[in-house]
Length: 160
Image (cartoon, rainbow, N blue to C red; front, top):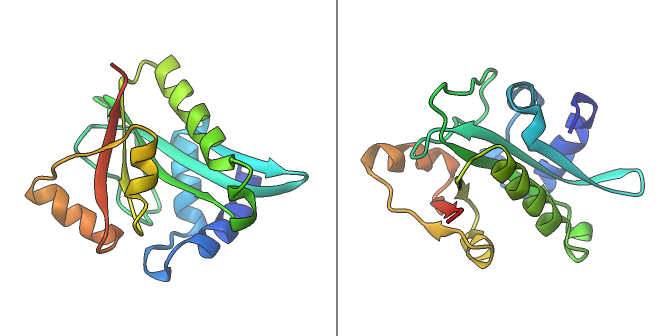
């Protein structure tokens, strides 16, 4: 992903998500700037049809939504898939699975043994098909999850 992809990322986000959890291009730019090797786009022809934004994080913490700045914690021990979305037209060709495989492979190459995410809008069954499991959230994490919507679920996959 490059900064020139961010308008397309915003377009796809608006197509896929409820308005209450949309993030600004500035927020995507901030995430991309701290983690450029872990953010990818899927392209069909010349058109961006999907994206994934991931960040090194400490397991048990989640990035705030829609912030203008982010940093990688010095004690980051895991990779957080912060956001992955694919246009309706690209879902049938497996764009999401391809991006997920790239992220998981990159995480393994970088030495991250655990990948976690917040499943939203009922997507936990998708993530379970890819080896992620629901993680019990403590009180402070439950509070943070509430910003991601009522159905938000904390999930993780370990590279055992």
